[in-house]
Image (cartoon, rainbow, N blue to C red; front, side, top):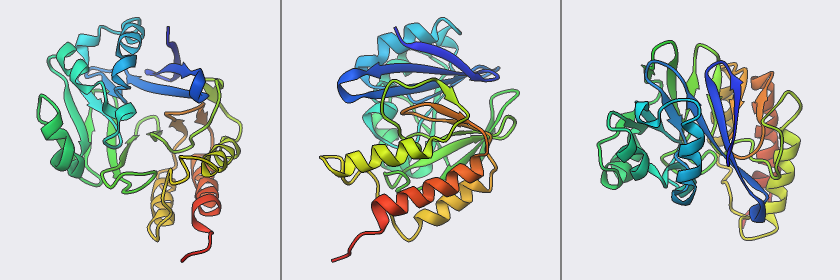
Amino acid sequence: MAVVTEIAPDLYRICVYVSPFQLQFNHFLVVDDEPLLFHTGLKGMFPEVRDSLAKVIDPARLRWISFSHFESDECGALHKWLALAPNAQVACSDLGAMVSVNDFAEREARGLAEGETFDTGEYRFRFCRTPHLPHGWDAGLLFEETQKTLLCSDLFHQLGDVEPLTEKDVVGRTRAALKEYQAGILAEYAPYTPLTSALFKKLAELQPRTFAIMHGSSFSGDGAHALHDLDEAFAEVFGRKERR
């Protein structure tokens, strides 16, 4: 059974660890008047994630389903969640809605523009476009303005069955994971483009206090400093290499 941990007020981390990949897959539930799920998970994980979420709220109450970019672990089980929650609406980037999600999903998504906000009751979410960060031209993140939590998808990717929440450095773990990937089939995990550093700076200006991280421990602490350090790690691993 997935491990459920409240990592911030009304924010629950639902973790499935897949040992052959040495990788956690984390799904985040925001409990509010209009509950929000960030990451649907893979189709094969749906029963486990659904049953774990049901320990917190009735899954049929979900009002919002969101994710960063069109990829199986981000939205593979979307059809199943929409069938379970009749009032749920997808919230994703306007580009993602146009090029993928509105054709894939059973109900039309709400496409979000840069800086667009929506409320779930007590909490207010701001959409931040992050094209190709960490990957996908449709990528974007949600920033919860009340608690200053960044739902940051694949950023701060870590390996291993690690603790749910840490106040220690996670950038070192991320650097190690990305370097390991560089030696194998996942060598092109993320691009480093002329826009990458500017996107990290934009996210740092939000001054997040908590990172809800898809793969690995979530983080509580100086989010701006961590994002600047992660920019350096991305530049080191993906950017500072000989160009042809």
